[in-house]
Amino acid sequence: MVGRVPAGWWGSHRGFACVLAAAVLLRVVALVAFPPLWFNDSFDYTRIGLHPFPHPLRPDGYGFFLWFLRPFRSFVLVVAVQHLMGLAMGVMVYALVCRRYGRARWVACLAAAPVLFDAYQVQLEQLVMSDVLFMFLGLSAVTVALWRRKPTWRAGIVSGVLLALAGLTRTVGLPLVVLLVVFLLVRRAGRRTVVAVAGAAALPVAAYALWFQSATGHFAITNVDGVFL
Image (cartoon, rainbow, N blue to C red; front, side):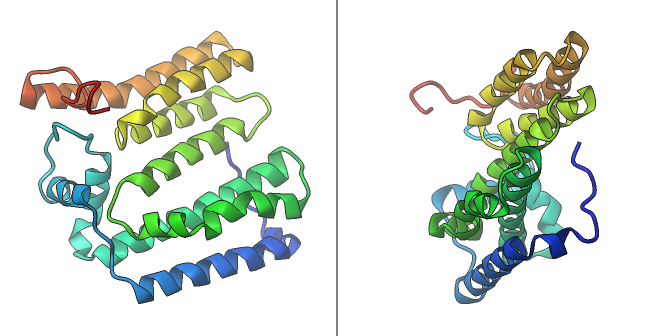
C-alpha cells in the first residue's frame, strides 16, 4: 500500500516541486480563462447526477461523482476537482518511477510531464465528462498494485475495487480487472490474494448489475451491443 509521504520529501524533490507548481499554474489559468466545457454526453451525466438511475447506454460512475458534488451546485468545483485528479496522477507517475523503479528524478519528471502538461489532458479535466475520473481510478489501481515488488492481498483488494469502479465509470475498464488477476498470477501473489481480488472487484460490479436488473430486467451494466462499442 502507498505509505505516507515523509515531511522532507518535497525538499528532496525540488525539481519535481517546481514542475508540479507550473502544472498547478497551468490549471489555474484554464479555470480562470474558460468555463466548464460541455460535450453531448455531459447532459446525460448531469441527469444521472441530479436523479441517479441506471442509464441504458453508459454506467453511472461519473453520474454518482456529480451527485456527490451536487450540494455545492457548482460545475466550476467539478472541473476543479478534476484538475486536482490530473495533478494527483502526475504525482503518482513520478512516485512510481522514482521510488518503485529507482530511476533518476529527472527521468521521473519526464515520465510525469505528459499528464501534467499535455493540452488535451488539461482540456479533458475542464470537460464535464467521465474521462478524468476513469483515468484517475485506473492509475490509482496501477500505483497500488505496483508499489511493492510482490503485491499483498490488501493492496490487491484495493486495486481490484478501484478497477471495478473504473469499469463502472467507463465499461472499457472492466477487462482491466482480468489483467490485474493475470498480473497477480505472474507475480505469484498466491491463491488467497487472487481469489480475494477477484471477489472484491466482482462485488461492486454485481451490485450495480442487480440495480440495473431491478430497473430494466437485464442483469448487465448497460444495454449497449457490439455495434455501439
